[in-house]
Image: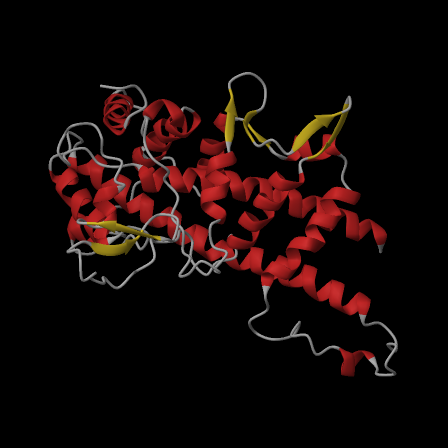
Length: 346
């Protein structure tokens, strides 16, 4: 069994559970168990249909006790429910950044002689504000207000902090918390697993800029000594540290994606088409593009490579949640710095 594989995570979580590592008072499978384990799994909106079917089969063959298995799935849903409720905070922050910039640029009478109310016709007060307009404003804040050292301090996260967030912020310390500890180790050593990329793109066409999760996963690193999870937010040029603007822009795109509309994107739905010279279907790949394949994309890029024929559950979705927790942690720290700076200016 390869270390840090999904089969390894199954056994490690089982060993910790039977060793008394679970807090029995925190599991409430009866509250989030519509339709039994089948209903729990199909309630996961980020699982594609085929992936959900495989998870049902794997759950039925799992060596985990029924109580442990149901507790894990119920807390998976509970965590997503709580995280979805927090998405509005990121939207409100980004809307505030754009609105403040518009108001400051529209103070008084403009060059065309129109007043503030007349000039403010760029949609800042519309219900569906383009949150991407906050990216250049936050970039300017990071590049001009914060120092490279401050940014390095923001974009660090010790591995143990993730389970602390799960326990203290989301009040989850049941069997699922045990499993997340194993999944965090998977993410930290992801290159060893040999699995393909976990992230999904929600893009519907080549012009849709919805690859933030994929880009963030690709640049996320883990340093065993010192920083833990980190990104190369700074680089050394001519003996001086400076902000790595490319990495910063990727993270700011990820920050905007935290506002929704979905917590975790699913692979884009593509209507199968047939070429006159081929029986293959053209379907969406994980990057939102197209590829010719004779089987569903879920099977083509599935990470169940443990040789168990689908009998081992995939923790791809949990790894995506762990990376989401990391992105949110850094976003919260950056937001705190931004608000602190503007509060001191007033």
